[in-house]
Image 1 (spheres, rainbow, N blue to C red):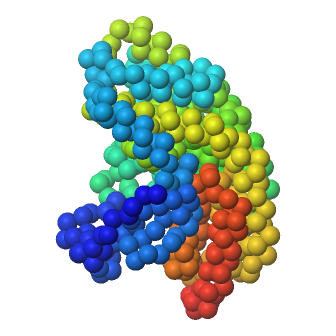
Image 2 (cartoon, rainbow, N blue to C red):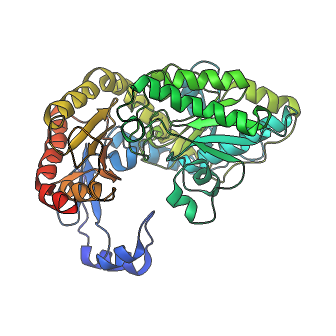
Image 3 (tube, rainbow, N blue to C red):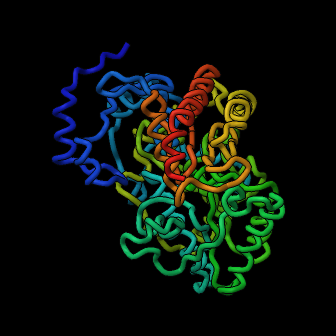
Amino acid sequence: MVTVRNYDIPALRKLDVAHHLPAQSSYKLQQDMGGSRIITHAKGSTVYDGEGHAILDGMAGLWCVNVGYGRKELVDVAARQMEELPFYNTFFRTATPPPIELAAKVASLLGGNLNHVFFNNSGSESNDTVFRLVRTYWALKGEPKRTIFISRHNAYHGSTVASASLGGMDFMHVQGGLPIPGIEHVMQPYWFGDGFNEDPVAFGERAAAAIEERILAVGPENVAAFIGEPVQGAGGVIIPPPGYWQKVEAICRKYGILLVSDEVICGFGRLGEWFGFQHFGIKPDIVSMAKGLSSGYLPISATGVSSEIVEVLRASGEEFVHGYTYSGHPVAAAVALRNIQIMEDEHLVERTREDTGPYLAKVLAERLGDHPLVGEVRSLGLIGAVEIVAEKGTNRRHGTGGQAGPIVRDACIARGLMVRAIRDAIVMSPPLVITHAEIDQLVGTIADALDASAEQLAAIG
């Protein structure tokens, strides 16, 4: 049993305002609220704050704590590696055992021709690596004009300059003068928002065709790669219609451009397969991954690369002058390797595919499908969304749109459930160890929060 320290929460909240700048936050709101909610400890699928509230973590931290909290095995392996070798870099033709072993393991899970792995520290950095690697590959192949990336509106690929530019979120582009040149954005396969009342398969074909249209508009000889998340996570858990990904892959092959699967959220069991591209039956050339790689216990990410790309780099004899001090950090790699072993030993991927994923879909449909404020429930594996609407049977939003989600989210948190609001959707991505009883609690709390928010939502219009 872990002894939880007796923190001075009021003092920490004051220090939070005085010195700490949290990620992706309004610092005015942080100040007005008198500091952040302080999370002090966690176990399984539940986190606890400094006021003693138990909160079911419907977001697995930030889409990442796949094996749940309190895994002593991961603590022990980190301590053992720290004692043996706490750090050494992978520059200058050196390496340490854990990242070598982890690279081999990740390659075996990726399968196919994805035999090589480059390590980074975050999903953003993984996609930065994608950006430089792809452009370097084409230059070395003698096609330096192939520099353009095609991505999707409302996609999220990270927060660095390159990865935020690859993403398609306008509110992120406003800050810092993004996107950088050479990135094109096309429509997303968001049926509920952009194709409502349209046949889903036909809509998916239209969304895929938009990629081909942009390739032709900018010139196929100038396009380097298409990048996409199998399921758009931070965009609102957007699950593409059947056939969409097969058409996207065919378009990439037709024009000889690289296909990049951003698995930062979908990877490591989230969709009921080790990687999302495996669920959709496609074969990417590059795969970015993070989050579930270590279940968030230590920062680490990876970029899986096909043998064809690596052979071009090797044949050139040139250095790939890219990397980070902590690329392949031995402690993070050791923890990630043990994390994967836990997932295998406990069959968490299969459990998500065959048991908890279908159970989440069933409970969402039964409890929320007919709710008067719900326009759609959707899920795949252990990731899902509840669309909030002003009129049942439509996709009409309350007010000007984007106001309903935060209201219902706050009502969920007040009732002991951590979920995320993305515009007018409540999204969830719980730990893969979540139980049926906890799924019942999760969905039941959303139902209660919707009921409690009905009057406030009606006042919006």
